[in-house]
Image (cartoon, rainbow, N blue to C red; front, side):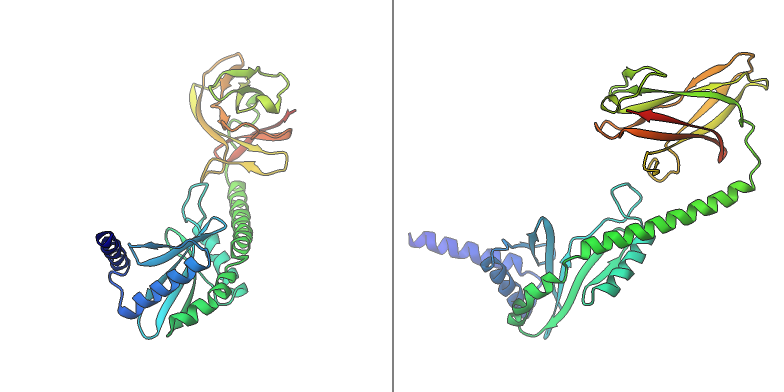
Length: 307
């Protein structure tokens, strides 16, 4: 039994030393004090040995506190924030910076900064005595309340403003472009539905029902083409019933394809690449608007209904 107790003591000492590597004695004291406090308050803390931070989760959100400097110690209280990038599940850097500035004006004491790859949310405070920090810990934790909602709201506003500005610039540039030679070249556009495996669930020109809709495919019917055979790069732009466009990530169109028009006295049918998602319920009931573009010029507009 005595040997077992000694072994347990050695394990605890080794664990504490592993936590506190690279910390000064004062920082080590602050780390252990905070860990004990969070454990007592049922926050279920952990120590990240990569940076000696004390971590915990609240409502599924990760928080961590790091320790730097000495006498007094600088506590940096962090909240997990957001990734910066170009993918759909990330935040764009420019509107994120605007949102960060707005949130910083609203929430004094909490600093939101935007780096190259992520947004950081933190509170920094100097404390000479670890007991002073634990005494105000919950007060500082409460300062993070509403940060998430306020940042996302400000970000969305900034993102929409940037998007509107880009659209206005594009419209102005389009005014100076020569019209596409494919204006009035399309006679009709038909729509059919495909499932996640690409199998037809609803044929062209038949009623389109939302419960069958995963992918949509457009068939373009061109009028007789009197010129020589030529390739054209076309885009489709689809607008939802609420007016919002469906765009590919980082693009301003729903689908793109290069088509070949052959010299012919007859109409030509060209099937566009399918677009949509494997997620059921994505296509809501209502009227959708579809535009066909070539060289930035809208050459055909129609609508289709999903029941």
